[in-house]
Image (cartoon, rainbow, N blue to C red; front, side, top):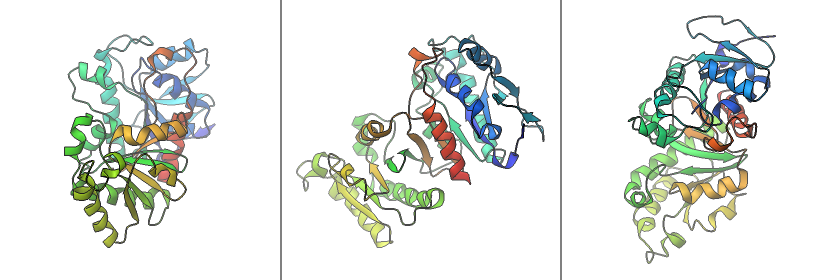
Length: 328
C-alpha cells in the first residue's frame, strides 16, 4: 500500500477514448511509479476497457480539491474524472467527445501551473477528429504552448540518447521555407541548449543542424535558405559560446550520431523518420521551452487495435519515466 506524494505527481491525459490511449494507460496500474500518477479520463471508459481486456484493475477516483486522496493498492490507478458526452466505441472516433479530450488537457495544464503536478504526459489524440468538432487544433505541442504563453515551444523526440528537434512542426511542406527565419532558428537553438542543460544535465550540448534543401543548398545552387538564414543564425550562436554545427545535408548528418547530443531538423518529415526507424515504440516526444515538463508517446491513436490487447505501452511507460527523470 502506498500513500501518494503530492510533491511528485505526474498527470497523464488518456487521449482519444476510441483509440489505444485507455489501453496503454491501464498498463500504468502495475508500474513502480503508479502511486505518483494521476490519469485524466472517464472512469467508466477505463473500467469498460479493462473489462474488455480481461484486466483486474481498480479505478480510484482522484479529487484535486482533496489534500489526501487516500492510498493506492496494487493494480490500481488514480483517475481524475473527465466524463465523455457520447458513447465510446473502440476504433470508432466520435468528435462529440473532443471537448472532453481538450478539457482533460486543460486540467493537466492548469494543474501544472498551480504546482499540483510536476509535469504532464499525453496519450495520442486525433487532430482531424478534434477539428471536426470545430476546435482549432494542430497538435499537443502547439495547444500547450498557446495555453502557457510559451513563445518558443520546441518539439523533440528522443530514443535513448538519440534526439531530434524540429524547427517547424505540424504545417504543410509548402509553408516550411517561409516559416524559417534567422531569429526563429536562434530562439529554438537557445531553448534546446538551455533545456538540455536543465533537464538532461548535458553541459554545452553539441547541436547539429540540418540544412533545408538537398545537400544543404549546394552553396546556393539548390536553394539559398542555408546561406541567408541558417548559417547566419549558427554564426551568431557560436559567438555566444554555444556548440552548434551545420548546416549539413540531412541525408548524411545523422551519421554523426555519436558526436551530437541532438539534431535540429527543419521540418517534421526530415527528422522524424530516422528517429522512429531507430526507436519506434520506445521513443518519447518532449516539448522543450515550456514552464513545466511535458512528454508524450511516439505513436498515434491506432484505432484498428484499440481494445484488442495488441497495444504496446512501452512508449507511454518511457514517456512517464522520462517525465519523472526530468522533474527530479
